[in-house]
Amino acid sequence: MGDTSTAGVGKIGWVDMSVANADAMRDFYTDVVGFRPGNVSMGDYDDYTMCMPETGDAVAGVCHARGGNSDLPGGWLVYFVVADVDDSAAKCVAGGGRLVVPVRGLAGGRFCVIEDPNGATCALFQP
Image (cartoon, one colour):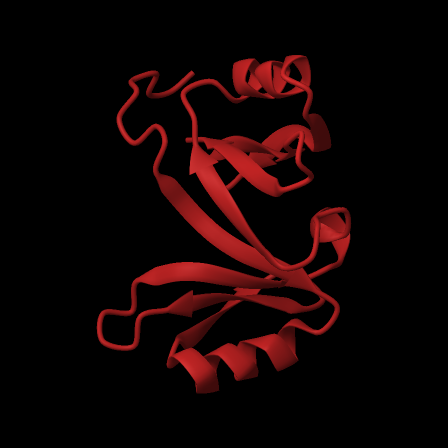
């Protein structure tokens, strides 16, 4: 099952956005923030990692709202690291929130997208 420690729980593990035109947003954030973009092949098209210009470290993603990303909410989506994504998803629903995207695999882990009782969305990620 992988690492079941609580190291990193609660930190922001990633942030990305899914938009109709990722190419335009890649260019916008490259110009405005100074990111250095990197291509991530999705088969027929590319999504992008946005990297620190001096180190090349990937710090964010800009994705086309297609395929597996077609059901993600628009705007920047923050991913909080959790110890057990299934448990956290169940607690979200029990606490009056809802699952926007059910638990599924992603980048060496599992995630879901939730909406809290006030309508704010975020993702929960278990490495």
